[in-house]
Length: 224
Figure 1 (cartoon, rainbow, N blue to C red):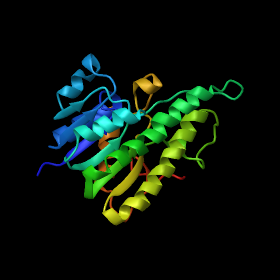
Figure 2: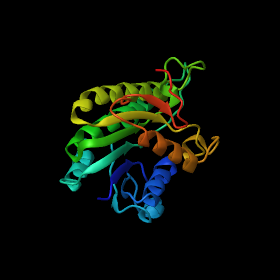
Figure 3: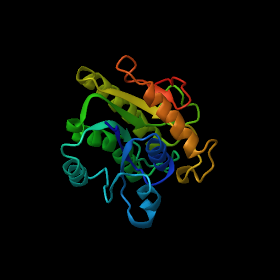
Figure 4: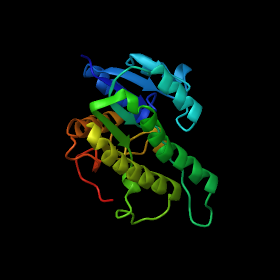
C-alpha cells in the first residue's frame, strides 16, 4: 500500500521541497496551502491531492480539511506552515506576536487534533519548529514572537508525543536549519532541498522510543 503524507504550507520553500522529496520516494502527497492559483502551480506537479484555501489558524478551514480527508489514512503529518516577524524591545508589536503564536504554535496543534482520526498505529507527526524556540540556546535576544511561538510548539509537540504514544503514534520537533527561503530573504546557509532531505531522514529514524525529541535536520539533538 502506498504511504501517504500530508504537508501544510506545501506550496513553497521547505514545504514544497518536502512534497517533491516524498513524491520522488513514491509517497502519495497531500499538499495543503492557503494560497492557490499560480502560487500552487509547482505543487500541482507532485501532489496527488491539493487542498487549497486552507488557513490553518481558522477553525472552519481546519474543519473543512478534516471533512475532505474523512476516511483517508495518513501515515505522516508534517506541520510546516509558519511565520517569522521581528520585534525589538521598545518597539514590540503585540498583534504580530499573537499572529505568530496562532500560526506557529496553535495551528499545528489544531491540525493534529483535527486529523487524529486519520492517524493510526505507526503514523508519525513532524512539527517543523526552529532552534530559536530553544530557551537554553538563546544568546542574542529579540524575535520575541517567533521564539515564544516555537517554544510553545515544542511544548505542544512534547505533550502530543506523550498522549499519542499509547496509540502507537510518534511525534518529533525538527529544526530545518538556516534555509535559503523567502522567510529570511533567501539569506540562509542550506537549500530547501537539503533541509527536506535532512528532515525526512529524522522522520525515518523516529520511533516510539525517541518520540517527543527536538532535533536539527542534521541529526543534532537540540536543547530545550
